[in-house]
Length: 68
Image (tube, rainbow, N blue to C red; front, side):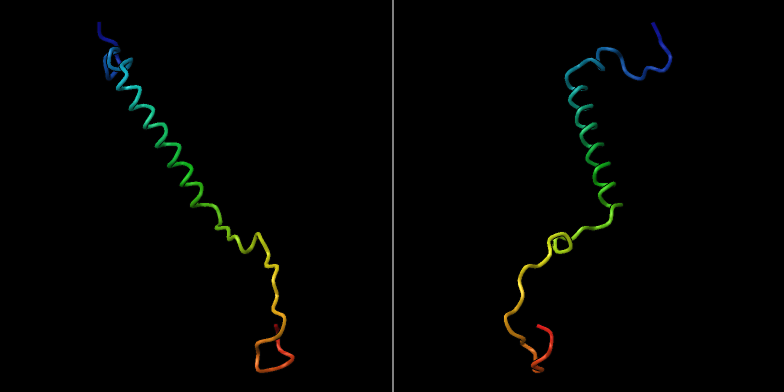
């Protein structure tokens, strides 16, 4: 019995080894898509999200009225 379009016998497709391999390929594909999307998005820096809360008590400049 020959069916066109089938590359592997049905016994191979329903085997546990094939299921494990298919699962690995699925996880690998999802990870690749996630990494690709992550590379196309703009980079986020923590310092831009969380502002600084500290400030010097006195200036360290040689100019007394300089920025802190």
